[in-house]
Length: 132
View 1 (tube, rainbow, N blue to C red):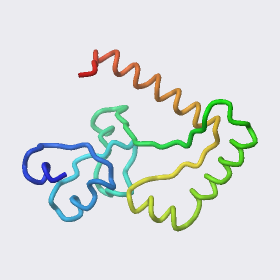
View 2 (cartoon, rainbow, N blue to C red; view 1 turned 45 degrees about the vertical axis):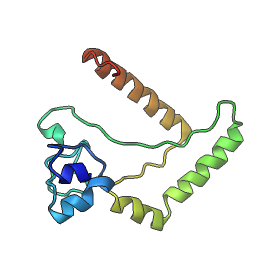
View 3 (cartoon, helix red, strand yellow; view 1 turned 60 degrees about the vertical axis):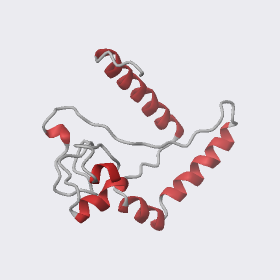
């Protein structure tokens, strides 16, 4: 961030938590958000998808366990994670960082991860993206 503020970077894609203080202070200007809709962290800043139809890039986190973990253990972990994600203090903290929590179940997370892999594999292939 200091390079950005020092004039070394013309543009950055950063998480709301990383850039919101700079936006709030007027040191940088938010010109678009990568979420499909308006971000609670940057009200009034349009989604990039309004200019580039279909554009959506979001950060996400998942709770994973080793393969072979017994189903009853997975269920207990999932219930505990959902309870934590619904705690008012936690919600307040993550929302203040521009995040939205979706406390789902293991099957839904599995579908989401697989869909993301397919989506990004296609983007990499279509754009001939190679590691440096």
